[in-house]
Image 1 (cartoon, rainbow, N blue to C red):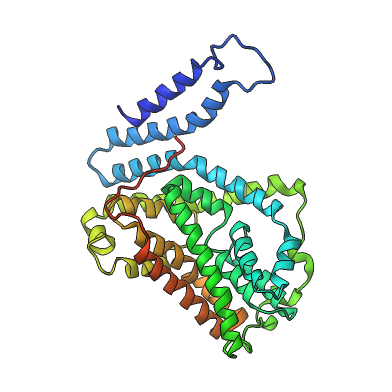
Image 2: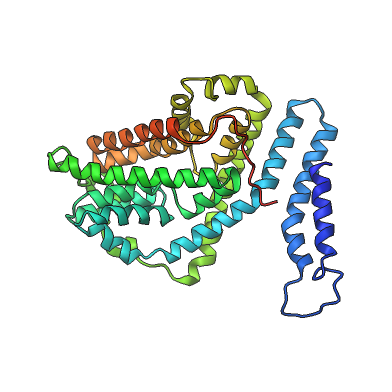
Amino acid sequence: MSRLSVVKDRIAGYNSHPRGRNSPCCNPFRVDASILSEFLWSPTYLLYYAADWCRDELPGTYTGEVGIQFFELTAELWFWVIAGAACSALASHLLPRARLDRVLRKHRTGAVFGATILGLVSPLCTFAAIPVAARVLQSGVIAPPVMAFLFASPLMNPALFTYTYGTLGIEMATARTLTAVSIGLVAGFGTQLLQRYGHLASTILPQPDRYPVVAGGSGAALAQPAWSELPRRFTKDLAFISKWFTIGILIAALSAALLSPEFVRTVLGAGSRWSVPAAVALGVPLYACGGGTLPIVEIMIQMGMTPGAALAFFIAGPATKFHTVGTLGAVFGRRLLFWYLAVMILGALLWGNVYPFPDDMPLRRSSFF
């Protein structure tokens, strides 16, 4: 039975549900199951129909194979794109910005733990986290909590957890969360140790003349947004992540059509001693957006990439983006940039080699459908 037939059967099943379209129940305050089912299944039906068209009309061609992979991946992931954008918009409004500011300014050792957790629940990406960290540091506070927040924030957030769960399953989503916590703590306490011996004390402060956002340095950066802005934020996040997911799905479809599984297993598979370093190196050109890279990694795992190599890619990718490296170097100087890259890359190599996931266990595609 094709996936298109499965979707047809599920739509028919919802429409025959006791509360579905054929139900005599007429409670106007109860959501009709048929309406919900059509909302959820109609896009999937159309996408699988397009995939079947490519399979029937373009058999044995690269164009047909790319089309099949593209439409099937989109059918499985579109719901998670919307769910992740909703999580990001809600997190941006629910994040206690005043508490974030207080935690980053605390001098107690426990502030490192609090800053790490806030980095995970914050929807701020690297480019948004850098001005926040720079503004707080410029006011003269100690660096460890700020560094814990700065290192953990790009590795995990509510939207990224949703995308990872929907694409690769709860195991990878949990692993990414644990690695983000560990790297944030290492960054915070490591910075504390380095400052104690005078290695970072003179270079940790931002340079406002080289980064205009820091020079503005007011409390407005942490202002709590109004709830009336929630729809606009959701629309903005959805448009942003949809663009990168589309690019990622297209690259994944091209990879599935043009790369052989033997090549992927040779470079990134369990039999390669260089699979984790190779995955770290791939993070430089391929990692553009946390959500957009997930379809690529999903296809690579199905073709033989080890989950450990995938985890290493997810850790090293945010650290080696050219814009991230350039911005961190401009704001905080080369010494902190080297510290940032060292923690991220060593963390990627370590976790990629010890990630406790059987190499021969097939990846479960966690589609909502």
